[in-house]
Image 1 (cartoon, rainbow, N blue to C red):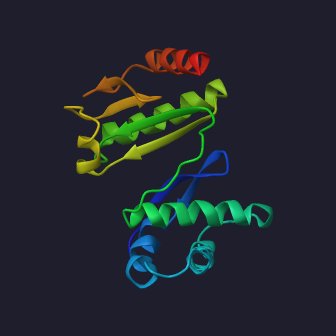
Image 2: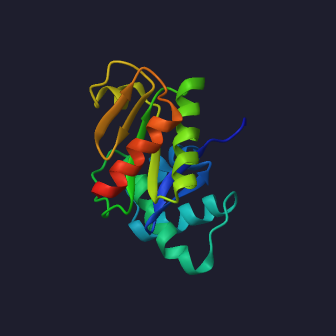
Length: 167
C-alpha cells in the first residue's frame, strides 16, 4: 500500500485533515452500505482511529462527520450543517499548480487568521459540475475567482478579505 492521502472534512465547525479516509470508505462501501448508522459510525471510528488522533471529547463529532462522508461516498444525500467562515474550493486534478494553489490559499487564510473550509476537488466529473473550462480554478463562497491560472498572492489576500467582510 502506497502513501495515503489526507482528506479535509468538516468536524464540528472546522476542517480537519483525515489520513486514509478514501481507502476506508472504499473498503466499507459494500459490506456496510445497509448496516445501521450506529454500527457504521463505530466501525469508521475504529478504522480511522488507527491512523488519526481522535480526541475523546470530540468523538461524537468525528463519528458524525465520518458517517456523513460515508453517506456521501455511497451517493446518498446528506445535510451539511451551516458553515462557519469562508467556503473555498480549489478545482484541479492534482497537478503542481492546483496543489500549489491549495497550499497558498491555506497559507493566506492562516496569515490573515480567517476561518474557512478549503476543499480541493480532484474528480474531473465533479469539477465539470462547476462549469469552469480550465484548472486550476478557485471559488470563494460559491463565486468563481480564477480559472486556468494561479492568481498572485496579493489578489488572494484581497479576495479572501473581501469575502470575509461580506459574510
